[in-house]
Length: 211
View 1 (tube, helix red, strand yellow):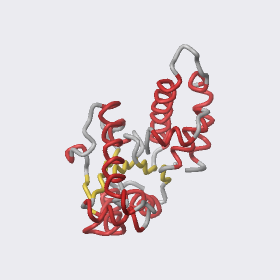
View 2 (cartoon, one colour):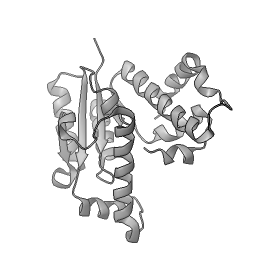
View 3 (tube, helix red, strand yellow):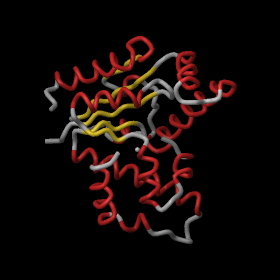
């Protein structure tokens, strides 16, 4: 039987990463969040900044995954002059990210944040897919106050980040990230607060008798 996983898709600056951390702590699961960027970069031999350009991080479990990947997919760590560098980098990042998600899901009891995990694991029976949202004005304020985004450019950063994430999922999985029917739960952190939103996710996991 497949082991349970929770995927968290979020609008930028909606507090989705914080929701994921609360959920993982309450369930005593592992959260795989933006350390994804550095970890994928390290495995691919790329600069973290380059990986971050293509969007969207967790120790312990990831160290085991790293060893598994290095043995199972050595070809992913070999560069080829036949492939243009930019194209190769993006393809490598996507493949490695997918392998990380698949390996993490095999271990189960993980909360996966972003990177199209909800699309890649869409047909997985033991998966709870969550979409974290909030109004744009609220997210702009959060971006400025908590994420350090320049107030003058905050709206553009919010819009551009969401657009890149939408494009990533649409390009590689043919799905619309913002289509609510792709999710089991849609939680509004502006209305519920981060802890309230996380509590609903935890309640559903427990209703499913996940431990």
